[in-house]
Image (cartoon, rainbow, N blue to C red):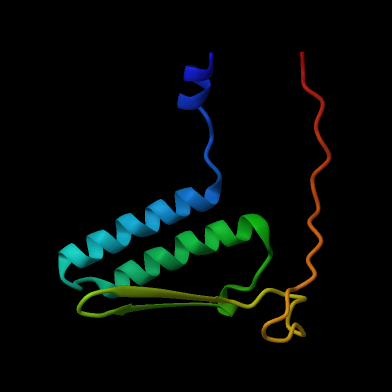
Length: 107
C-alpha cells in the first residue's frame, strides 16, 4: 500500500510553486528574453493564487521583479502582509496560525 500512497500523495503548495517557477525561468532562459512581460504577468497571477490561499493581501501590495543577468536570473517578490507593518527589520513577526476544525468523516 505504501507504493500506491507514494504515487497518489498530494504535495504541499511550496514545492509545487518552486517547481513551476523553475520551469518558467528555464523557459525564459531558452527563449532569450522574449515575452518578459508575459512571463512576469503569468508569474504574478500564479504567485497571487498561492498567496491568497494562505493570507488575504491586496494585489497592489505584491511586487514582483525579474532581473536577467549573463549568468543568473533573480526573481524578487515583495509582499506586504496586513498586520505586520510594525515589525522592525531583523525581528521575527509574531504570527499565530489558525487551523480549521477537523471535519468528521462521512461513512
